[in-house]
Amino acid sequence: MSVRSKIGALILPPDIELRNRRFELLVWSFLLSLAYYPGWFGFLAWFSLARPFMIIAKLRGRQAFNAAYFFGFFFNAFSLYWVWLVTPPGALAAVMIVALYYAIVLLAFNRLYQWRPLAGIIGAPLLWVGMEYFRTLSQFAFPWSDLGYTQSYYLYILQIVSVVSVHGLSLLIVIVNVLVWQVWRHDQAAERRVTAAFASFAIVLGLLAYGWIELPPYPQQGRYGVALLQGSVPLDIKWELENEGYSVKLYDSLAQTVADSSIKLQVWPESAAPCYLSIDQYCRRMVGETARKTRALHLVGGLRKDVVGKVQHHYNSCFLFEPSGRMGAHYDKMKLVPFSETVPYQDNMPFLKRDILTKYLTLIDRYDIQWWSDFYPGDSIHLFELPDVTFGVLICFESTFPEFARQMVRDGAGFLVGITNDTWFGSSVGIHMHSRIFLTRAVENRCWMARAANTGLTYIVDPYGRIREQLPHNAVAALKGKVGLLDQYTFFTRHGDLAGRFSFLVLVSVLTILPAIWLIRKFLLRR
Image (tube, rainbow, N blue to C red; front, side):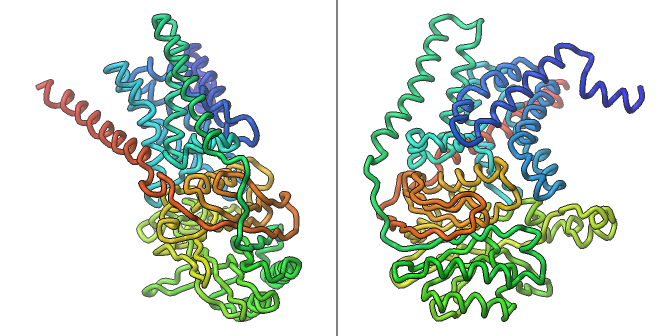
């Protein structure tokens, strides 16, 4: 068979049953990805996994793994396509690697179901959420598409995350999907199907009732004045060396428009000062002059260099400029986007760094392929302590880690600031997904949060996920508003991500026991 024929058979297999199965999984993966889009699409998450569970449960061995990987691959391709706008190699790596997580988890579910159907039905939600929690761990972490985020436009439903975290909400969503699967099963007794339907409705109605009780009808007002600057500087202008002054002058002009005695803190987006503020005296002096003229604190996104041992490290950082114009404390981003901002464990895999790869892959420079950067992660959380308040900063991707934001609040942050540069993603769904992830952190911790993005979405959100003030996408403007200060911890803030941790423990147990059983059967019982 020729290569062309093999590719054709791979895309359109001659097996009609396989072809139909792939088509159906493709449709459901697309519907599940739609649940993350802005607006009312989140309802799709409550049943878009039911049919894939039904299909994969009946398959055996390699067929189950292939179907699970196929579903995970296209779900990631549909929901993360916008990563291609930043780095094509990183997008391909993200889609292929993250799809493997789904394949392994769904294969484990398949094995449990083949052993005991009830074990598979009970285990499916725990395995899925265990996988979501696992994606928050290590430098390969990419916890972007947790199912709970699909409900971020439904504020009544979202309120439950202050108790169970976003992973607890994901758990409930998968449970409902499993119940819907049981409703669809024609081999089930009618009373069981009716019971499953009532149980699924009860979960959703219970969440709505809890949110209705929890969400106060009359919002409280903030009391600490902040200003958020949105410069909307195009990328092709921002990173040209001769345009360094352009960006800083633009933000200086925006800062002047909101400068008054009520504004204590002005926030610039991630890398708003496109220079190494730690060593670039000209750029630092310009930013300091802006802080002095406005008589306010300025939190400024920029870059930092340092020599660790004999190796020069680059950091994605933010710096606090005092009203006197002096540059004070800084914070280095700790959670970096794998295969976009950094090579995971790059000291152990230096062959993946751009400067090494370009020596052998000349097409990177020839075709101007956007490869990943070589930033290093910071080594510790730093809170900015002011005379009247302490706040923490989440730089871009860091907002996707529930426990990371929680730790800042536990360490004493009175409110949280988010700075990001989502210009890379244009007007794609990526900017909306990122925004709603950030908003979910506010609800989890009942914490006011302020978000400054280069092109948007820039806003202030209260502890219940209500956006109080915001700027239009791509506007060149500054936003004045007030944030409140944290007054008490939520159950999640006090106790952490119990749903995620427990589910991860179950996942690890299952992924340890199942291979052990397979090895025993293969090598010991056959002797």
